[in-house]
Amino acid sequence: MESELERKRKKTAERLHIAIHGVPRHLAIIMDGNGRWAIRRGMHRVEGHRQGARIVELIVKHSVKIGIEYLTIYAFSMQNWKRSKQEIAFLMHLYAEYLIKMRGLLMEDNVRLVHLGRTNELPRTVEMELAETVNITSDNTGMVLGFALNYASRAEITDAIKKIVEEYQTGELKLDSIDQQCLGDHLGTAGWCDPDLLIRTSGEMRMSNFLLWQISHTEFFVTDTLWPEFDTYELEKAIKTYAKRSRRLGAYVS
Image (cartoon, rainbow, N blue to C red; front, side, top):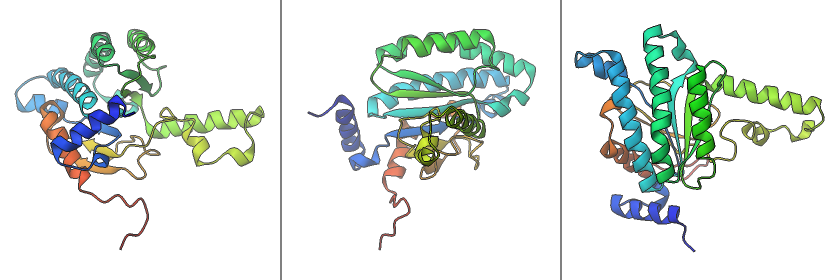
C-alpha cells in the first residue's frame, strides 16, 4: 500500500513535471544572509534573524507538504559564538521563543525534531526548551527536522570517534566492526539517508563545517537569494534543478 509520504512525493513530482526520484528524500539547508538582509534595509541585524525564523516556519511546512523525509537546517554553528554578545543574546532568546512556538506546528504536521550539536554551551533556557520540544515530538512519525544548533561537523565526527573508542575499550565493539557504517551510526544523523540536496543561500560558496561526513555524494544548489527572502518558489526551483542532474555516485555512465 502506498504510504502518505509516497503519495506526497508523487503528487509533487507530477506538479513540478519531474521524476519522483527528483524529489529529494533528505534536504539540507545552510541558511545564510539574515544580517545582510537587515542592513540593506537600514535595520539592525537582529531583525534579519527574526524574519529568518519566519522563513524557517514556511519552509518546514512546505517541506512536509511536498514529501521531504528529512530536513536538516543549520541554525547556529559552534563558530558563531565569535559574534557580538548582543547578537548572540538575541539569537538565544529567539531560539528559546521559537522552540516553544514551533511545537504546535510540529505536532500539527507530525514532525519529529532532532537536535544536532552540543548542548553544554547553550544557555540553560535554550537547552530546556530544546529538550522539551524534542521530547514532545519524539513519537511523531512524519518528517524528521534536524535542527543543527551549536553544531560543527568536525566536532560531531570527533565525538563519534570518542564513543567508538570507549565502546572498543569496554568490549562492546570489535576492531573488525569499526568501519564507515559504524562511524555513521555514531553521528547525530544515525539511521537517516544522507542528504540528496544541499541548498545554501546568499551566494556563499563554502560548507562552513556542515555535515561533512554526510554530504560526500550530495548535490549542491547555491542561490544569491538571502535567507529572509527565500520562499517556496525558491525551494521548488532548487528541487527542479536537482531533478535534472544525473547522480552517478561514482559510477561511469556512457
